[in-house]
Length: 162
Image 1 (tube, rainbow, N blue to C red):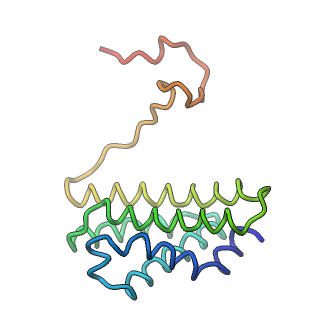
Image 2: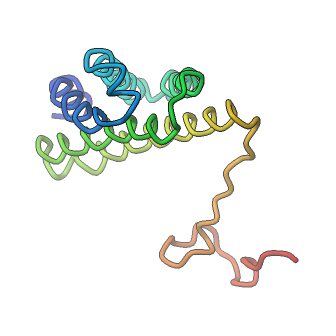
């Protein structure tokens, strides 16, 4: 079984698990189980589509649109990110239960990459809806021990200019 088969065959279980995780969130509780279930199912299918085509455009566009819609409806960004994370956690859980160990790393890498881009788009659009444009993310991994060095260099290169 590969990740696409798992996302298709276990879709109901993934959605049910994610639904349990978000049902206590204020706006999702208010919107009701059926609407929330359909939203989670749509997200799950978009993740599968992004993995199948190796194209994030549809998933990222969906995340941006959802962010703007939810912002206008009064949702807190954390609630919406929580829903995306609930789908990711449910996929992880089903993957750990149903996939051979040798295939998990690749599968979870695909899922994690797709949803990381979606959550970044969601967060950026959510903030822009409230405050305007957001500056690009700056990866400061090289200044942290344990992050690994992505490019060779000297420690002096990591000094913040004054």
